[in-house]
Picture (cartoon, one colour):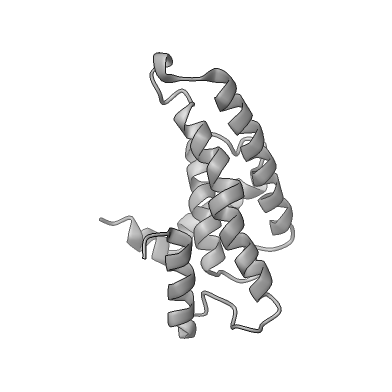
Length: 140
C-alpha cells in the first residue's frame, strides 16, 4: 500500500481494538470516511499548492497568483474543519484515524502560517501535538 489515507483506514480496521476507526455499520462511519477523503483531496491539495508557492521558495520559482488562489481554497477547506470542530475536541467526538489524516495537514498549514484566521484549528493542532503518541513519533 502506498496511499496514506488507505494505509490509515486499513490499520484502523486491522487493529479495531485500538478504536481508531468507528466499527463498520456504526452511524459515525460515514463521517469517518468523509474526513479521510476530504483530508486527502479538498484540504491537502490547496495547502500543498500554497506551500509550493509560498515565501519558502526562491522568488524566481514563486507564482504569486497560484499561491493566493491556493491560500483562498485552503482557507475555505480549513474553515470547514473548524466548523466541524465547534463544541468538540476531535472530528468524530473522540480521537480517530480521521484526526490523523486531517491533523497532519492542519499541522502543515500551521507551519505555513495559514491558521492565523482559524484559532480553533490552532487549538486542535496543539491537542494533536500534546498526544503522547504524537510526541513519541517525533523522538526520532
